[in-house]
Structures are given as C-alpha cells and as structure tokens.
Length: 546
Ligand SMILES: Cc1cc2nc3c(=O)[nH]c(=O)nc-3n(C[C@H](O)[C@H](O)[C@H](O)COP(=O)(O)OP(=O)(O)OC[C@H]3O[C@@H](n4cnc5c(N)ncnc54)[C@H](O)[C@@H]3O)c2cc1C
Image (cartoon, rainbow, N blue to C red; front, side, top):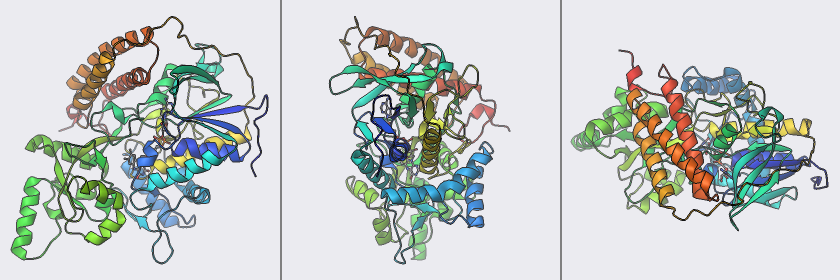
C-alpha cells in the first residue's frame, strides 16, 4: 500500500511527459510515497512510446555471459566508437531487472507455445533478444503504465497541459536550480505556474522538425529547448536516426514498418532489383531469396540487415540515382500466415492502402525517427549547467530527451525503450534516497499582461513549413557544408521572426512548438556544421575521404 505524501510542506515532484520514461519514473516515485504531478501535452498515451512497434532489447538471464557480451558488442558496434562503454555495460546488465518491473506493472510480452518469451531480431542485432507484444509493443507498455498511473493515488496526471518554460529559483542563475514550470492549460488557454522541488524532463524527441517523420505530433523538442534556454548543456544533436523503412504512400503520413520485418527475412529492393528477382523466380519455377538482388549489398555485406544508418543512406542514395520516390520492402517469399500473425497492426494499416503483407512489394522511404543526442546527462539522468559544467540542481532528463552515451553515434534498434526505463528507474531511486527539500518559494507569474492574442495564424503555419522544408532538404541523411550553412542562415532569420511573434503574442500551442522547433533546428545544424569527421548517423559528403 503506497504512502500518501500530499501534505502541506511535502516536496513536490513534477514530471513533464507521459511516455515510458515519465510514467515509469512517476510510478516508482509514487510507490515510494512521493506525490508526483505528471504534466502532459495531450492525452497521457500520446507519445512515441505508444507508437513503438519492434520491442525492447534485453538479456533476461543475468548469468548469460555470452548473451550479455553479444548485446554489448552489437550496441558498441552500432554506436561507431562513440558509445560510453561503461553506460552500455551497466544499462544492458540492468535490463532484466527493469523488464521484471514492467512485467510487475502488468506489461504483457509475447510468449511462444512453450511459455517462454518469444524473442525477435532486428537490424544490427546478432541474435534474437527483443521482447515484444506482436508489432504494437509500445502500445502495450503505454497501456499498462498509463492505467497504473491513472489509478495511483500519489500521481496527479495533468493532460492537455503544455509546458512552456522552466522557472529558475533565481532568474538567470542556473546554479541555483529549477523551481517550477510555466504551462499552458489548453482547456482554458491560461498560463499556469507549477511549483516543483524537483523537475524531471521526459518530453521525448523532435522528429517533427522534418517533413517525413515516424514521430507523433507531440515530438517537437520542447523539453530540450526549455532546458537549453535555462542554461543546460546539449550533446550530439547532429546524430539523427532516419528509419529506412517508413511506408511511403501519398495519402498517409509515414507509417513505420518495424525492423523486425527485416529480421523475419524482409528484403529491400529497388525497381530494377525487383524486376530481376521476379524474372529469376519465373525462370527457375521456384521462389528464391530476393536478398542477392538487393542494392543494399553494395553498401554492406549484411545487405538488408545492416544497421539503420547504412540502410537509410543506401536508400537515400538509390532514390537520388533512380529519381524514384521510393524503393520496396519485399515479403512475398516469406510465410504469409506467420507474418500476418506477427505483424497484425502493420497488416491492417497496409490493407487500408490496398497492400497485402506477404504478397505485395511495399513502397518505403526513410523518415526521421529518433534523436540520439539530447541533454547531456550523468549516470542518473542529471543534466549539466552549460556555463560551468556542474550538475544542474533539481533537474533530471530521462528518455529520448536525454543523451546518456548509450547510443554513441547511432542507436541500435530497440535499445531506446530499454535506456528510457533504466534511466527513469535510476533518477527515481536517486530522488528516493535523496529527497528534495520543499522550499515553497513565491514564484513569478507569467508575463502575459498587456499581450495580445495573435490575430493571424498564417505566419506560424508558413514559418513551420519553411522550417521543416529547410531541415528536410539541407539537414537530412546526406549533408554538405554548403547546404548546412545555407540552413543555418535561413534558420537564423526564421528564429528572429519567430521571436518577434513570441514576444508580441499570448502563447498558443502552435507558437510554443514553433519556437522550440526553431531553436532545436538551429542547434542540430550548428552541431552538424562543427563536425570535422563522419561518424555513425552524421554523414557529410564533403568529409568523405577518397
Ligand atoms: C514509430 C516509432 C517506433 C518505435 N519503435 C521502437 C521500438 O520498437 N523499440 C525502441 O526501443 N524504441 C522505439 N522507438 C523509439 C521509442 O519509442 C522512443 O525513443 C521512446 O518511446 C521515448 O520515450 P520517452 O518517454 O522518452 O518519450 P515519449 O514516449 O515520446 O513521451 C514524451 C511525452 O512528453 C510529452 N510532452 C512533450 N513535450 C511536452 C510539453 N511541452 N509539455 C507537456 N508534455 C510534453 C508528450 O506528450 C509525451 O507524453 C520508436 C519510435 C517511434 C516514433
């Protein structure tokens, strides 16, 4: 039975975000007797977590030295020499405990007929080690976490509440720490001041910076931008993971086709490869493997099963060579019934486009998917003060908003849910062992007096389009200095325009998000320009050594 600490003077923990990181942390703290407010932009389930398909990578048997070593090795390899190996080691060794926590909370992972967990394999993994709930793992995790949080007497879920800016205990002095957050209550469009003795950012990523993205609309980099404005340090923002296999149809926003589909044998072909493979099958009178016909083999001997960065770049290059809008993911050589049973969500979505899994070639192209960089944090999720490098008091960042060093220059598939849950647990444990003092300071109210509502929303929509177009064209998968510099100049101008709008009008969700996206776009571009070598997800054509 949880203790209730909702008493006068009790410390107040505020978490922004209700994905896996935010909700797991909230439940852990609430179980320990803390009162936790969870602020979230839309409904609690609206998050990238809810859209995760493939699963969560974990070695369940702590004594399986070979399995642990292999997961560590795959992660380090994917990170292209940039991972913090002690972080990788510790996160992977902690995985089985955190999976047990998720099971205790009520998450159901798929089991085989023998009662053992069914483990999937994805690109970059040398073994089957991914727990999943068919192809809707995130939905199942989010279901269990949000139901538990909603029923918990120590958790106050605040949906439709959009965090705008962090409040420092002493304005302009990051060393004094965070004291709260201003939020837009979207039920009545009023700005409210929320006091926090400790504030945890779990706001996810910023895929909405690009036109083609697998991310939900809430992924606008708000937490990153808020913390940056408050003086926190960011790291590795140039490392943006583009998912190679997003369904590319004219009538729909990109829909992810999980990497597990390639793990089950799906192969990527261009038009020419598809034609050659089909001809060969006809000639031989049997269906042969399409893999030898894949252009991806020119880029890696792992072909379609290479890591995401390699496959995404290979597709990007092929699309530029052929001028076509997409390539294909081919599954017709695989067992159709098995695919339909493993991937029911994808099957249903494909059917809305008249496509049949295990039958039709699926049109795919890459889409912005995951932010590897973020707020640089220590081993328990504490960001740093940008000025002096010290830990930022009373602030934590967990999940995709953070950069822990786990992913290096490229995230291995299904490692992000794992990293999020591990750091959520660590931050919570640290707070439990070091409860924050309650200091109930009178906080300043928002400065909206005298401001006007924006009379025309046209400029906001237009500026957002321009921002996304610039990022998509100039700061995409394959970069060049000339294009990056062009982007930097355009974003500078855009930033000034957005700032003018921001200063003059009462905040609305579109302006708040545009302000954050513009800042994050500038930071991503700046980091990309500063890089003198290609590594992992950062690929600048001008840096290719002949
Ligand atoms: C389509 C898709 C498939 C994926 N598949 C996998 C997979 O199979 N395995 C894997 O490991 N990873 C996968 N990922 C990545 C993984 O889902 C995310 O990295 C992870 O869920 C991030 O969790 P999070 O808690 O940090 O953020 P999220 O789950 O994105 O949650 C962020 C929360 O913050 C809230 N928020 C944001 N800004 C504000 C604000 N200003 N005010 C209030 N609330 C705010 C949002 O509304 C949301 O509730 C996938 C991602 C996508 C998009």
